[in-house]
Length: 148
Ligand code: RB5
Image (spheres, rainbow, N blue to C red):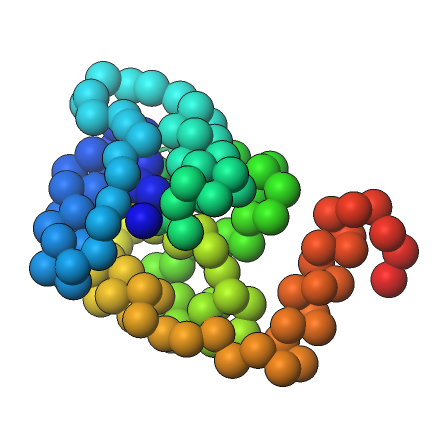
């Protein structure tokens, strides 16, 4: 299950991402907003990230104007590995090496086709594991307040 969320700037792009997920046969749940009136991105970024943290969803795709604010909100939820992407290479490597579980994009930064290419790459790229898992374990240690 893919958690989706956006602020008002990302509503239209989120609809395009839903269509992509449908085409790929992937289930999604929308945590809002679906209004175009100005709203606060932390609310929606938090709700989607919390669904991932709780195990209700496997990962999340979040959209705001830049992808930055909603990603910052999601990153405050323990266990979130957030990547804000404007290109396919970064999205691909964020899965392969960082096992990112939250993808954020900026609706005011990239076009629909690029966003869909990014999302598709991110959704299909496998995590490589090995030395990369060791580094992710270090990220978790930082979250627990441990010294490296
Ligand atoms: C809204 O104007 C904008 O600040 C928001 O969508 C996002 O880009 C914040 O990071």
